[in-house]
Image 1 (cartoon, rainbow over the protein chains, first blue to last red):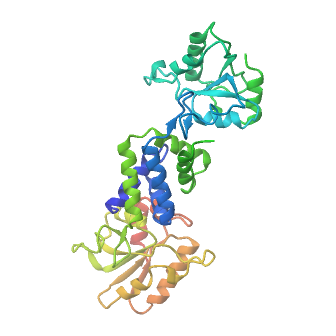
Image 2 (image 1 turned 30 degrees about the vertical axis):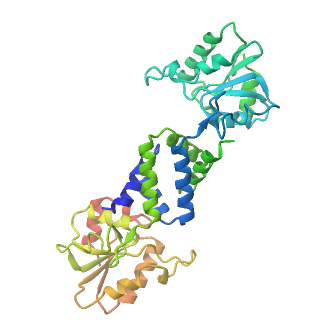
Image 3 (image 1 turned 120 degrees about the horizontal axis):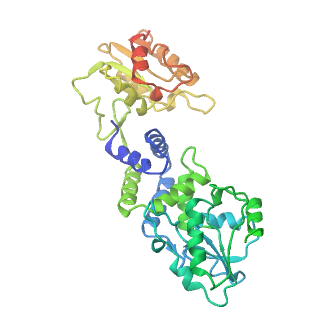
Length: 193
Length: 193
């Protein structure tokens, strides 16, 4: 029905999560009316994603260089590590302006049904980071089945090697960390056990 | 917070209609996990949009070549012209498998408040298409204020030069043509006046 080039764009948009045919058509028609400059910016950003966004060699966070902004920052406490599922969660934790440690990004959660095992996650590098200087590892995965499983796994793995804490309840069960407001997050941090 | 390249991609997705910050982040994280092939297809389709999707020189429909598939098709009745707002509407009309004429795409509707005047639309080329062979012009704009205004304007413009009809009520007022099912559209075609 549509010209092939245009249909290709609709197909590309259809691959985004939650985007059906009608929405993809709407996106494609919007793109059709964009300035060349906007489309160029879009292409440039997609190309840079293709070339690969760097991961911090220490913590696995998305990064501009070899190390991320937190691992490079000397004013932060490098002896407290907060373990999160995704870089999105770091933004949520930073928004409460209370935490001053560093992070470790797992890039996923253990999910046996989906075939995501501990060795598929960024867990070994967390174990390698643990030494006598590390005061605390705070596990801040989502309070879902997968999040709890992963937290339990890491807790057992680090048992006796360092102090391991888990965010307190306060975040509703089944909720997602990056949708939690800063105040609730603060309560969860304070009540960690 | 995020690396610049990644933030750029989020900003690009944010420009799509109805996409806020959270959704744009979700799209960007999805893109991060795509195969290189998928990203290449996306970039290729965006580049071809930038180079310009051709418009049919007769009716203004999106087209692969100089003329669209309908204007090139000799089995269609070129003496009946259906006037639509957008190429999207053609797909809806074709889905009822009843109409065998050709189309004319206005690429918008008259909207004084938004500054869209008759001269901004593909109306003059419609007037140029009218000759003694043209049996009927069917105006199939949406039954909204802008759609009715545009229909009235075109009806007056072509008055006395050819037979002008308007789709019958049947499409709910305030509705959009491309969300109408084929049966309702058929009724609207049959009852045109």
